[in-house]
Length: 374
Image 1: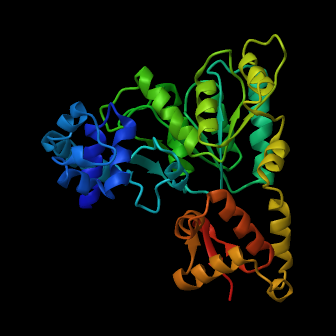
Image 2 (image 1 turned 45 degrees about the vertical axis):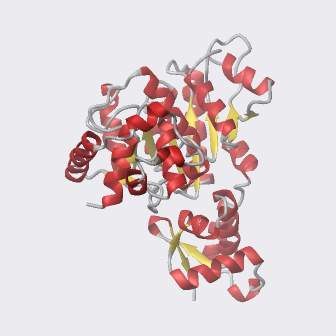
């Protein structure tokens, strides 16, 4: 197995009660193995951990043994182990200070899709909430068919978002608050199985980890951090959806909320968030597309069908020329890889790629790969 993966898994386990610490040390020293090698010199770091943490990180034996066991389980069950240096790791999480060092993923969707949206809210979703989600996802099927829908597989808004995505042929990923050796709630097992074949299941937790209350809060930061936009459909005055919205705002993500009747208990959280400018008001997919500047998906498809001549659009911007030059060297590339190699935010890269597609310079292929047309 990859040695760096083993050390990363062990480091994440050692810092299981300090989820931001493992990523912080990894970023300071450049690799998990280097953290291991410098374990007795951590007090010399510019951002030195506390004496208690340094003592915690002095003995890796149990953590390395546990990491080996986890790797065997992952390998046996077709689970990908992802760390920030890998292309499949969600690049949007690299913008978050408290991103998980290790993620366990079972599925077939790219976690670096061109567009990502998180749909969250109450576990007590009303008929109104179900209608909103059904209409929203149904519209996205036509307005933004390459979008990845994220949520937490919980009752209510979460599971409805996943199910509507599946019904409309959109990829959807559930972020879990436990290991991949179990499923909570068990009632959603059939939907989860479908998602593995049309999306996936993602977690930062090793096998043997239960869905404890604190794990749901940690799960929410991944849901928020992986999204370009987070949509709160329904929420009471207090709830996990509001926590996710707060986290998303902290990550400078776009936060949107669906308004509801003034006295409706599960619209109070949304209405208050809109009133205090904690979220944009959204009523349909058109609002999302407009707010995010994702207009043109339909025009892009028409342009490709019409076969727009590249010669008509031979004047490239500096950013477009940079991406074209990179693709000439590297060949077919994912949007996430382009963002990483050009040191651009995913939103910027998406806009550049859209422009190049409209000019007939590149083409989006199966698997999310962009191909430079000759």
